[in-house]
Length: 208
Image 1 (cartoon, rainbow, N blue to C red):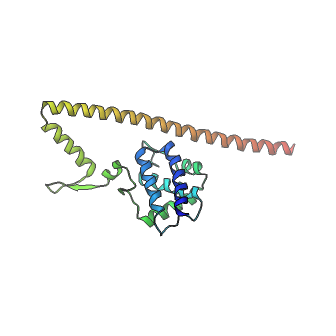
Image 2 (cartoon, rainbow, N blue to C red):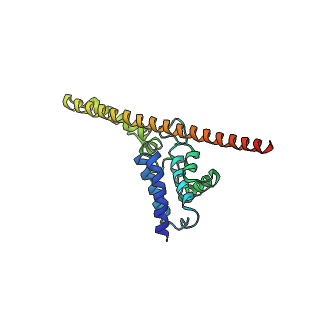
Image 3 (cartoon, rainbow, N blue to C red):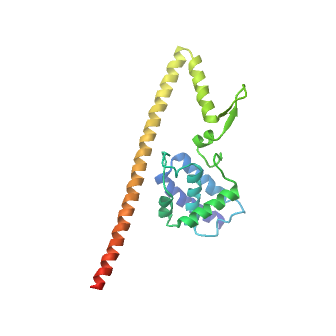
């Protein structure tokens, strides 16, 4: 029964991820779903599968700063809850319970992207300086480039150019996805406004 419920929740999570998450974020969400299906502290068989799925997505969104508009993968809690047809309060509370039970925090290596992990991980240099992992990695790349010979430099330049091209393409896809999300939000607001106006008109007709 537990395995069956976990599978159902995972299918819901995956359906959301296909539309809004990157592959890396999707892997984080499914990893969390699998974890919840194996622990005893939280019983995934209790409660609606939609609430579990929404809460899992909510956790991943929160620890990866997806609710921040500056994030390339930005989304809102409304998008999550509308997709799964759940209430924001219920979803948020369940997400908090999951985080506390599994001790999930910012930079968690199981549920955060590489970018977030590196931003919140630190290394000590031989000189005793403490640096963010991301900064240390950039410094290492710079040292490699400076010490490379002509042939190696050419290969590095080609590699970096290709990486930049891929990042630009990924950025364009993220911008397009964000624009799509904004359109969806605008359409939902417009539809809600039309429905409210229709109700007002209906009440006015009854008064006549």
